[in-house]
Every structure is written in C-alpha cells, then in structure tokens.
Image (cartoon, rainbow, N blue to C red; front, side, top):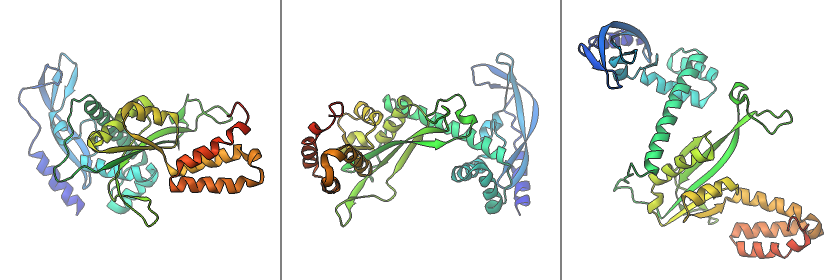
Length: 329
C-alpha cells in the first residue's frame, strides 16, 4: 500500500518540474541563470520518491539555486519534512539505534542509525538557532507577545531553573575539563527552565501544578546565552504582566544572578527539596554543638521549613552560629 502511495506522490510532485523562469534571485541579491534539471531522491513516510527540480546557477556567488527544494522543505535534506518530524520524535525518545528500531517496528520505515543521527542533529541545530533568534527579538522588544483574550493571565507564574550533568560520548566532550580523577569531562551541563502555574492546593495545603501548564526551555549554552531563552519564554507566558512572579532554584549563585538580572521584582525561593538538602548539610556542621540533640533539632527545623516558619528556623539557627568555627560563622 505504501508503495502505491509513494508512486502517486511522485507523480503528483512530478507535475511541477521546478522551472521558475530563465532567471531567479539567488538569495544574495544576484540573478541566477537556469541551467537544467536535476533529480533528487527523497525518503518519505510512504517510501523513496524521485523529484525533478529546476537547477539555477549564480555566476556572482558561484553556487547553485534549487527553488523547488525550498518549496518542498528538503533543502540540504534527503528526508521529507513529515519523516524528519517523525524521526526527531523517535530520536528524542530513545538512543539513535533504538530509534531506528522504533521507526521500523511502528511505522515500517527503515533508516540507519547514522542517518537518524544526522537528521536529528541537523533539525535540532536549526530549531535551536530559530529559538535563539526569536528569543533575542522578544527580549529586545522587536516582537510583542500577545496573550489570547480567552486565556486570562494567572495571578502567579512560577519559573523553576536548574542545571544537571548529561552523560556524553567521548567525542562530544573532547578537550573539556572535568571534575573526575582523570581531569576529563564525561558530562555536559544542560540548563533547564520550566514555566508553569499553580492555582490549587492538596489536602496538606501544598500547591498543585496545573495540568498542561508547563512549558520548557533547555540548552547546553552558557548562562549568558541561556538567560535570554528563559526570559523570552517567561515573557511569552506573561511574566511581565502578572501580579507575582516566583523563581524557584536550588540555591546556586548563577540562578539567583540570572533571576536578579532578568526579573528583579520576582520572589526567589529555594525549592523545598533542595532547602531540606541544605538543612541536612547545616545540621551536619552543627553535629558537635548539638550533641545528643542533633536529630531532634534537625526534625524541628525541617518542621519549620515544611510549615513555612522561616523566621523561627533562621533565628533558632543563628543562636548556634557562635559555636561554629569562626571561618564558618
């Protein structure tokens, strides 16, 4: 059945040979002259098809121009746009080899591992470039983000920011310094921002994230390049027009510096998980001063944290600081 579909698609596209007149714009302001026709094999969800395209050459630039490729969305690509989208989803869900198996078993599409890798990385790079340009335009005020009238802005908007190491192949971290004994990097830090709303609470009074309210931004970029990506997404979600913006982080300096620079009026909060982690670390430092009361003190401070009594937590802890090493106090 797919072979019949591929044959019909090939005939349909073959009705237009891609001739756009004796000359076309080369894209750089010059005129490219028609030379002849070139065939190209494109792999689609129905199978491989051959498409004839008009080929033009620009004498000033010295390169060829194929208008039909741009129209079909296959410039510098051998997979159709639809198949590239399917491939990208599979490659994002599993390693490239496993993605190849998934495509074969679920869709009857057979693509080699390297072909999936090349397609996913090419489209990923293009998407990242587009996101970077769009984010810069939003942050610089060149684009105004409009909120649909049927979607009222929330009272609060949350931005959770974090970074984590992602295992990489040796080639991907070649030349990068690492924290391991051998001094070589085995991971790269990916920075993430999740923007979401919370309008209800559970039986314990803790906020519940609204279903389908989360949008994400992730990048291997430096903090300086990641900041406008996160800021643009927050702007798109209405961060500049709501009553209260909350930035959640693990306490890392780079997160608070980013938040202060981009959203100076936001409320910064260390998320509960990391706040408890920091409190455990503090209790370890206070092991000697607390003595046999260590566990009881820790549980009491965790209770302060859970109930939001931060003032009591801080004042109680400050009374113990003089007992610490002067460098720590």
